[in-house]
Image 1 (cartoon, rainbow, N blue to C red):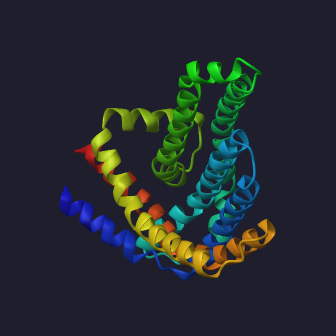
Image 2 (image 1 turned 30 degrees about the vertical axis):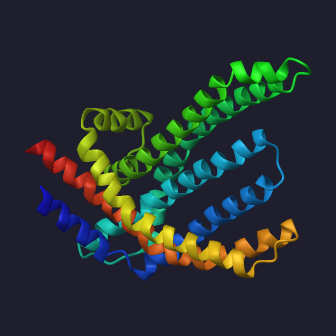
Length: 271
């Protein structure tokens, strides 16, 4: 098994630097970056309840964008390993209905999060009732904890769907709501192999993001103009452009390895 995983890891990495795929993915990562920069801008100076929204909403939006982009990326990877000629335009034309279908999956997840966020707002209102609010906040502190825990759980579910559902939709050329339930049920039944594959798929991404966040943080500490909010946002926007470019190959690897993981799990079932 480990030799098979090594083979698919190396093959996914080998095809992560295709220029056509990098140029296709780059605008999607720019959109993700803009949503994160805008959320960071609104987060500055916002009240704690609003900050909770700006912490999670960009993540769900980014995963929705990446799910949409992931379908044609995985189909292009399938053509690559079959040594077929790559045509981004043709792949996009054949994938529009799948891209729209998988993007719609983020709507109920985002709606569920907004419900949790509104309920969290009720606890903030109770906390600010004159005279008794502070005492109520102490006794009801378990409520915000459970709501934020629920938000984190939704984040994990969307990440699992991004890695395991996207290749199913791309390679089976079908998108049904039941597919998400089937994927999550398989993960529940075989958590070890699924989580191991997810961690391997995320590893290069986490390493590269870690280095770039460190570089951006050090740049901010030594070079940024910090007096005005708009200046901070513009600085992060211009840093985000090379950030997205450098991130493109590792995101492509993530989807390449997701496709390889899907095929690997299918072979395990047949055995």
